[in-house]
Length: 284
Ligand code: ATR
Image 1 (cartoon, rainbow, N blue to C red):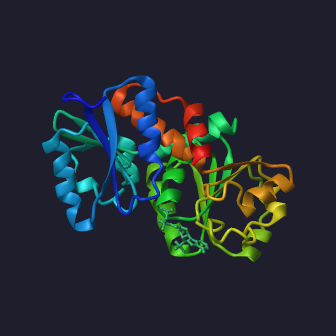
Image 2: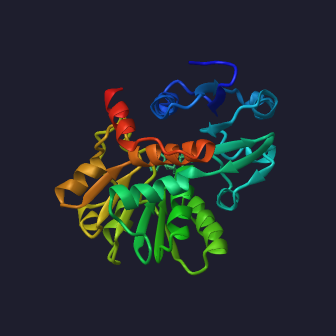
């Protein structure tokens, strides 16, 4: 029941029609009996600064930030969590009496997915990362922060992979970093030991899901876990290929759910029920 004391949470981004966040968070609010509501606030780029000011003026408790504003909101915030500052991207804002703090729960969300759903410990492992965009940056920081030993960044645009490598090297000089241009011959020649493969590119996403995975089966076979951040379809051709050679696979739904759980915890101190969110996702 909404009343005078109802606190408001929300989501800013553009466009927002397909986001699951309002349904997930409102379900958790009801289940936990909290006097909150989570709303969707689609903001055009020219409205972004006013939108952030409105968080203070209207006393919103906090918001999630999604594409295309995760980087663009930074100048409008009062302070940043150190990890969000390193990454240069924010997906959660907490309003503490007018003081706006930016966090990035994608990082913890990714780590929790690997650990809790994949039973995978990151420390000391070797990973191959496909992509060098926003999602790849969050994954790369998550892996480095948790003590990955070696990270190979492979991207269609080689320069972007090198740029990410340089940024990471500045913060994590102890991690063995390398880059390569995305090409099948390059990957076929891969022979280094490997524990984890993470694909952050949209390749395999609906409606174009019948594409051949760019990573050859011989390389997939060497890994213990393959993650494809695409979750529509739930099983991409890369995950099918992993299953074919007996390697465990995870899609990106876990990261989406865990980053939401971490955001909800920052706003309320309480943790939504993961299984209840999984049921909701299955029903939509
Ligand atoms: P996100 O926030 O989802 O990471 P992004 O920042 O636009 O989105 O990054 C998309 C990533 O997927 C990039 O690494 C992109 O490669 P480029 O840097 O060469 O653009 C990669 N990507 C997109 N489409 C691709 C395709 N068809 N094949 C291979 N890589 C692709």
